[in-house]
Length: 274
Image 1 (cartoon, helix red, strand yellow):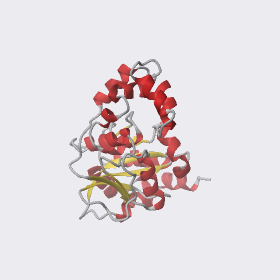
Image 2: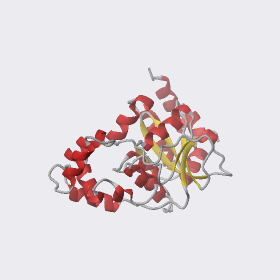
Image 3: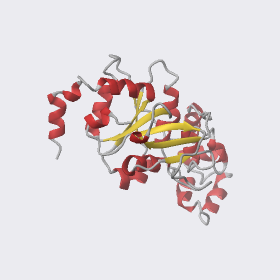
Image 4: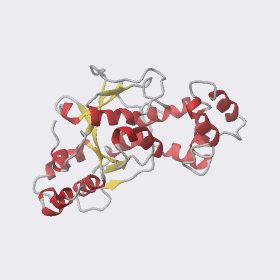
């Protein structure tokens, strides 16, 4: 499927479709079972290299990736469980009777790369109590399919694939255009949100939740600093994401012709790029 939006905003990468399926796609890139990996890396690879990425409950890269893609509460499987995860996300496990031995064991294990953050905390929230409120507020679910698949939109067949959303990786000009286009047929001012969440949770469970709304909203993502670090080499530094739930994407596609994207202000903005 070719996107009118991608052509109109002159995207340098492919929009990425997220699909639920019970059939493992041919030639898909997968993480090994229980192997660490950043889910957003496979989104980025789909956008820039045309690969297909596939995930299931055993190959979702990390505990947050499992939660984000919709494989239940994988934080329960985090070292030390939900309590240690909440400390990891906030002030760390260094002063935790339960968590400190786990962190010290990580130093000499395959999890050594995360030992410092586990012990001292990522500090994305101020305390474990707030982190627990965040976790409990996530719309976790188990998707009714074996695989969650991400692939370039031009490899998607809307008549065959169970498409849940489409994610664009764009610069500030492209993001501005997508925000406007998401509101083109609706004069309300809250048609797009920027949720605080892990990068994989935005096109995952948070976008899934939008499908339950009468009018699904667009979601701006890639404000996750850890994920930005992981995909900097692939996507560059000047990129955020915009995820359109499938009904919104279809509406936006139908709004391109005759819109501001064909007017002088947008064309001048594009022509002024260095």
